[in-house]
Image 1 (spheres, rainbow, N blue to C red):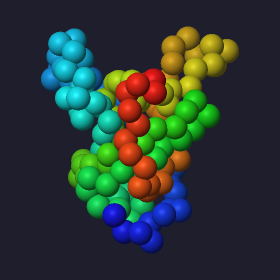
Image 2 (image 1 turned 90 degrees about the vertical axis):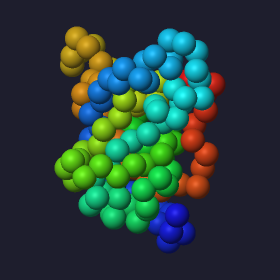
Image 3 (image 1 turned 45 degrees about the horizontal axis):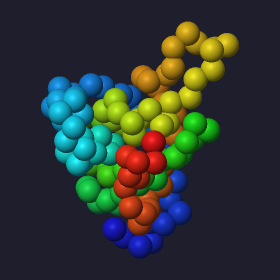
Length: 127
């Protein structure tokens, strides 16, 4: 990772989706494989550039609900300012819920601030 990237921070809207292979690993108890698939956020080329990181570097994402460290992956189908994550312990840590505003938690629009980090990926045991 580019050491000058420390401190770069951008706003992102995360959209979650499901993945059958990740779900199978969770059900079968393959914790390491589940973590490897879940602790990932897919970003646009413009957001990777704005964060001054490379494909595979780690980023810290935070909002009022919590904070996590995950691996950033390049996805040219993402629009700038949006990101994709699988539904998991990781994405759930960032979901805010106010029953006065909505009947269900907001898994399809998770607003976060993201910045590069040298921290390790958040262990599942912290959830």
